[in-house]
Length: 474
Image 1 (tube, rainbow, N blue to C red):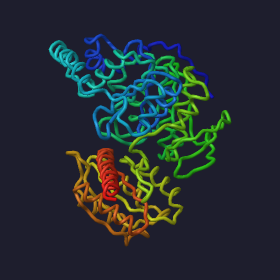
Image 2: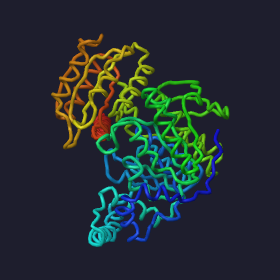
Image 3: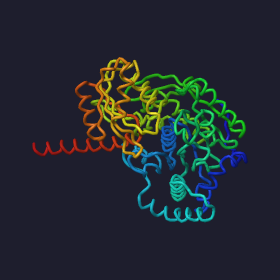
Image 4: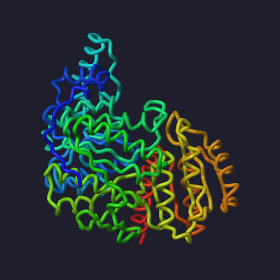
């Protein structure tokens, strides 16, 4: 394992590389008193997995008794999800029961946004720079975390890293780089070198870096080598100790619908996680090693935090009968990871019924290819629908694409339907799964995942109410 240190020094080369962000977001924060200063922060960037890593970090830190500010994006059901505060284990337990605990209240948003809006007008007037919506949201989060005197803040980038609104932080406890991949290429670049340069932009002078080993990612060897080269060059430039974690560091011991048990090979310690993705042990250890290096949690808190961690909408089990999996997979790498998980869960014997919707500006063809052209499970049906977004792909275009992909596979006889209305599509999928004794799997968009969570909660509430009425009749 690489030695790490928290004696961070701000490197001038970092400051120059983020100058456009400083002129925009930095100017906004300065006018509201730079609330981010003196915060203890874990800063997370990456293509796939950064949200899950923030969940592991938050669960570990709360298990250790800290008051934690948790900043994530995007949200699934409510904007307020993006900005949360958990005060130790009691708050965390409520969240783990799917309660909207810790979310920033609407009245707090309105109160804190008033001075932020005024500061934004001053920035535009004085500099000509227009703060982005994400700048304003990040300013809101910093303001609330400072006001509530959080012990630690878990800070997820919105997009990229180098020019991200969160990158104002100068001395993170650790910079954590999740699995690399191809997404948001219109903003981050078309090559792995360009994309990783943006992600590595959160690395700061002397501050430890914990990175998902690109060689464990579902990308080509050439891209993995390029990603490692960029990370190593940037870390050397800023004298930032770099530690990779990958599958070589993990031994899987058990795997089932209840979760997975694994051994962390460098220490021999054994951990349990409820999260089902094959890559989750690596995410958990990135969080654990970052917190351990910062000296903020003992082994008991780390083990307990990993065991309690949940991450809604990402390979989340919503029902046991029929088994209902909800996943926000929306790019090729996430699609490959979903295929691997389904292969483990079905054992090649349980059929799958898919419900999917996609955004037209995503590489949905490769995502679909990763999930549908698999030899590891049979597909009984696929229902195409549309996420609640202006960028949604037509359900009927998605249906045509699926039919093309399935035509050359052993699943070519699978039933393929399209319904742009999500609730009708969900009803059809549940009916088909019941008829075929199949697993339901929803994927393709986090917008769709949020809509499905809301609808499934409504279904559950109606079922509970119906049972109550039946008992009253008796």
